[in-house]
Amino acid sequence: IFGMTELSERFSAGLVRPWYSVQLCSEQAELRLLGGATVRTFSGLADLATADTVVIPSVRDVSQPCSPELVHAIRAADERGARLV
Image (tube, rainbow, N blue to C red; front, side, top):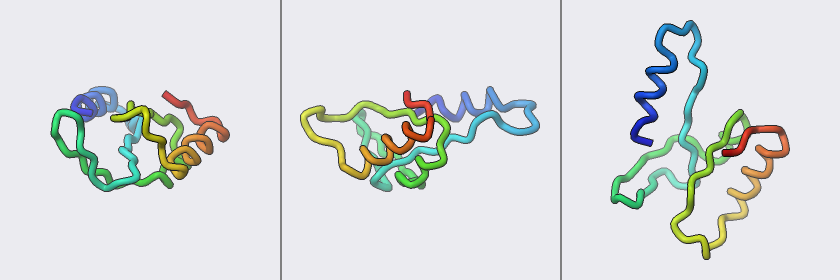
């Protein structure tokens, strides 16, 4: 997350149109990271419907189930051919 801005600037420098548009999507507007930092998101799960690539991070507790809405959004992205990372 912390290198995303630098990478975005580096790979889009001099391009007429940037290669990528990056959105951080989440079920919650604010996410607390393991190191204590808070990340604010402005895109929800509905935005996954137009993503070409979906990067799925790890979860805090693998014994807790993911929400049905999250599972549905990821499966729908997969079914329409989005890359899942």
